[in-house]
Length: 72
Image (cartoon, rainbow, N blue to C red; front, side):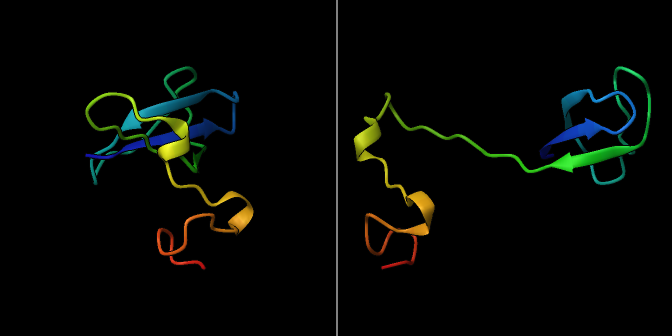
């Protein structure tokens, strides 16, 4: 079951919800069904905490590490 982020059009509340395929989502603050699903990011980590400089990045769409994100 994925976790989705929502913003309520009625009251502006932002929240996350663990959603099953057949679940109708409502705002936990005002019970409205007028919701906008938000774009969200995910986080993952391995053993320990890697240094920021060791993580590949593609700022502004310009890849600093050719081959990592498919851009050269």
